Image (cartoon, rainbow, N blue to C red; front, side, top):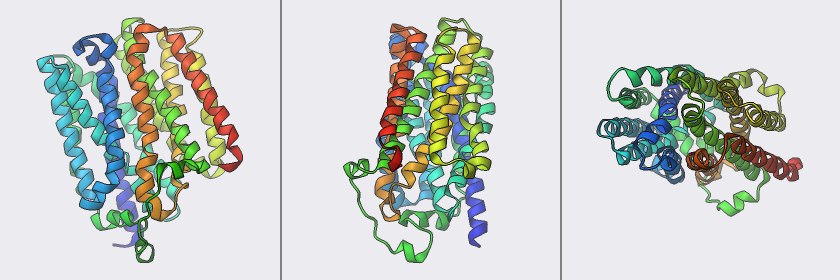
Length: 399
């Protein structure tokens, strides 16, 4: 198979896998906080299942390159789909048996799946031969499908069987099986070559070099790329996880309104990625960072002064756009901060930043909704974004 044909096949399959993965994740994001309020011993712990998704990602992410080296990337991606199927089944059982423990087990499995699926974009980048940014954007653009389909499926399947939400978790299990099927068609030889840091024979002979976390933090691109990913993922997770609970408990929103909120949020997350496909060559990474931070500030201010279902939905949309630009630019900074022979060692460490942000944001969403107002939450996120702006400004010329 020619290099060009192999590249197109890998990118096409990874886009499908990404769409399935994000559809499954969108189902969990739409309903898990609400299910948590029903199953948890206290509403303070309602978002713990959401937190476990990120915590397991944090734990597993550094191990993904090591496991991929032993069994191959294709096998790892197939196993990821199987774990997602098991997670959906466990979450379904948690609803039918009213077990908070099984819900936590189910979301933990989804967290492992997330850690593995996060490497789709890296594999796409590695086989791109100079088209890294475009390939990452193509993979992330598959989220637009998930943005529209996922929350709608979550709302619809939640009602088709009793108890409520059981059908939605069965859907997660089914999507995991779909991921297994799609990934089984990946050309193993082509994607496994990326484990050596390159897809050509000359570069593949280079030995993998270990690089410490401390050494990476001394590099401005790695440090600031990680900071941007951390900030955007924290802000997104805090607002996303808390918004559905806030809309249900305080604003008395309907299921359709909450579904629309999540659809707008995910459209905000993934539609800008398609735009970047066409304008990325005209926008430097620095410009993308500035756009992201300005949108993040606007997102927090929207629902500070006038809190309604509409303004919360708008905040969900804008914080999704903030995440999209930040994640793309932050990932670009991370990937260019290390040499090809350092990739295996550095990549797992770089992946810690976004998943740590997701974990902290999800963890605080439950207590914040119980202890402080929505306005205070938005002010908290605003202060965090402003702090990040100051820290990035210090390294601006080094990025």
